[in-house]
Image 1 (cartoon, rainbow, N blue to C red):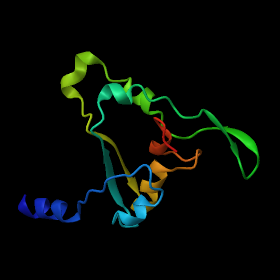
Image 2 (cartoon, rainbow, N blue to C red; image 1 turned 30 degrees about the vertical axis):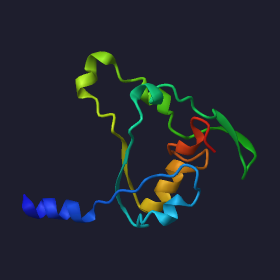
Image 3 (cartoon, rainbow, N blue to C red; image 1 turned 90 degrees about the vertical axis):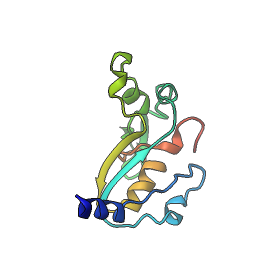
Length: 128
């Protein structure tokens, strides 16, 4: 067990997301290599449940077609939590995934293209 714990502690790092700095990911120390990532928050569930998807449609530049926005709807996901199951909630670690380039994925989740399957965090609650 100790070798596994040492390995996990050796590769894990934490970076704060600055939603006002479009280059935060470059300063974060996140490597641009493959790996798992987790996004954590201290936002109360009620705040997450009140975030309205920033846009439903967008005009795709390459072929000037109207497309659905591909970003995840935070409100829709948070509303799935029902009060009777509160003891099972994990509202701190709210998103995880694998990426071939961690730094690029961090940027996509913050300042994404509307067609990218990302969180679009800067677009919510008066952001970008």
